[in-house]
Image 1: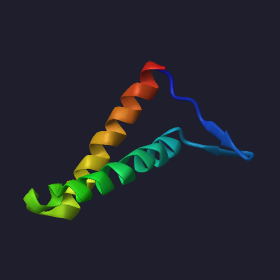
Image 2 (image 1 turned 30 degrees about the vertical axis):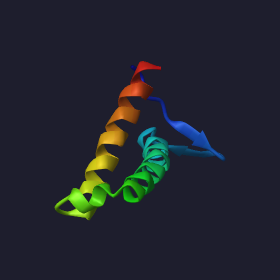
Image 3 (image 1 turned 30 degrees about the horizontal axis):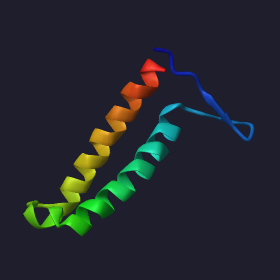
Image 4 (image 1 turned 60 degrees about the vertical axis):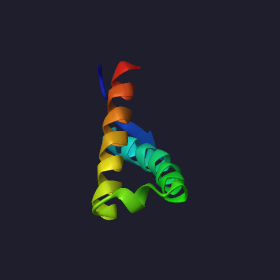
Length: 68
C-alpha cells in the first residue's frame, strides 16, 4: 500500500486529488440514479446525504487504490 505522486502534464499532484476526481465521477451518476428512483424523498437532508455518499465512495476508492 504505497501512494506515489502523480505526474499530470509535468505537475506533480498528490495521489488523493485524482482519487477525489474518480469518486466524483462515480458519485454523480449514482446520485442521478437515486433521484430518478426517488431516494431523496425519504432522506431528511438531501445535501447531507449527497455529501455522505461522496465520502463513502471516496473511501472505497482510496481502499481499492491501496490494494492495487
